[in-house]
Length: 374
Image (cartoon, rainbow, N blue to C red; front, side, top):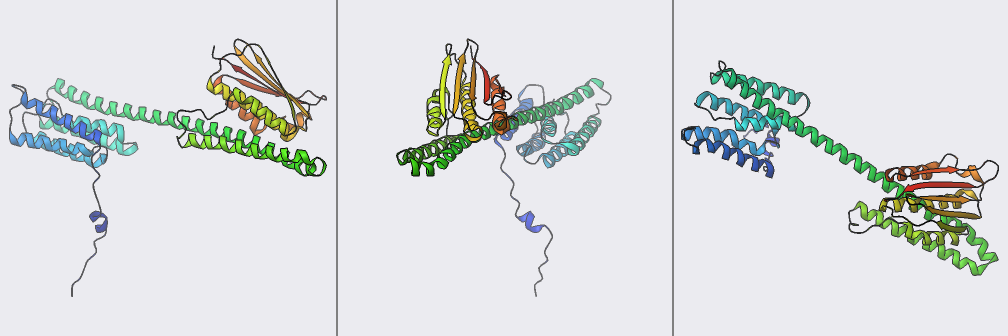
């Protein structure tokens, strides 16, 4: 009878497959090997001995996995270096492998593990100096420690810069997500408002004015198609399929926007004063969204019959005013998600937005100030 003993963890050991070296680590290892070999090629620096060369090469090879397995590789390099230091004289001018390992400790490890590894390598430096009988030579001792501390400091600095870059990238991603969320709100909110108004009027038109009912349903269809087109563009941006084209609307699309709102039953008049100035793409989109959000709110909440859009151009800026004759403060006193979203949209382009409702007179007005590029 054959007994099989299962050793705990044996399956994990058998299943272990070392990861291949990273390309950057391969390059660094080759460079360190070349520097180490240079000590033998230069005259009167180091005498070539096979044992010496093999032992020093053994301390360099583990650097191929210095960032893949930082702690085991650091311990291996440190131990081999101490072994070489105890058996080989004279030593290399610089402990190349150890310096790279100390840099890796600073740039890759964190927390208590990093503190412990730094302490071990500082202790190893002292032991190496004892083995090389350099304690009585303050200058050599000072140079060794300066090199080690410099390598660790450069590693810490590299990790700090990497962390800062990640924070900036995360902030940029959050800002982009917020921008897309505002665009989604504007597109969906506007389209739904148009479709709801037309759908509510449809049954009445079918009974009283059948000839206009068809136009109402066509307006619903057009609003839905336009919303789908803009949503596809936004999804394309998320999937990075929209490169090379600007999927976001601009002032040139105001005519189509106003036409949609008119088809929903709201009388809209547009007026422009001054000479148009140049706006950045972001400012153009923000200007369009101001008019879109104001007209959408008028359709959804104001119970208005008329809205006036005024584009007042000056050499330095564009001032947009959208005013309606609806029920006033009841549909926008607190700003809501849409109007507060406009403030967030205008801030990056240097703009600002205000809204007001004259007490007792009814009506609601949104005013946006957007600086030009000039």
